[in-house]
Amino acid sequence: MFDPQRMRQMMEERMKEMLGCTDAEWQVLGPRVTKVMNLSRQTGMGAGMGRMFMGGRRGMQGGPGGPGGPGGPQDGGRRPRGPFGMEQTEVSKASDALQTTLENTAATPDDIKGKLTALRAAKEKARSELATAQKELREVLTLRQEAQLVLMGMLN
Image (tube, rainbow, N blue to C red; front, side, top):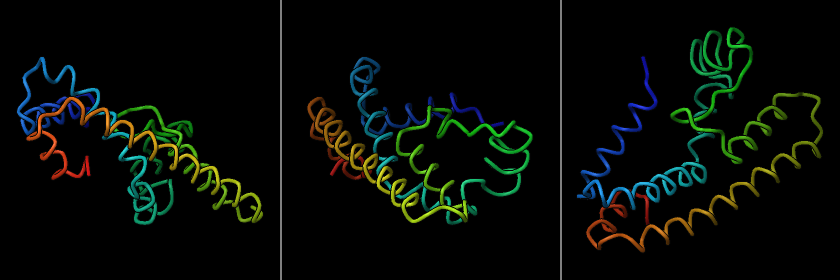
């Protein structure tokens, strides 16, 4: 069974190892790295590509949003919380709202335009927050750590 807390711990341990951090250093770096990772996910194309391959936001049979999965009919229709059990972001909420609108064949062009504008605004806000978070992370990194994060695509 998938354990989001365990997955998060494994990711943190791997990141600490790659950056050569002590536990004390990770206390400073960890929250900043996590913030950059979360904001990077919001500004990327991951959610849209997932929708394309999994047939909308409902997912595949038995998967998240599918019958029997979180968000499916047996789950009372609740939406999944997002990656690793985290709260949904403004970008994911706006994306879901646009998807719901697109699924409604009676949606007007104005309805779609409003949801699309909201999604673009949420993504732009996330991009701005990402730039700030990356700057704050760089302030506490060694040159070696910064280079490693550039290679990983977390910094540019």
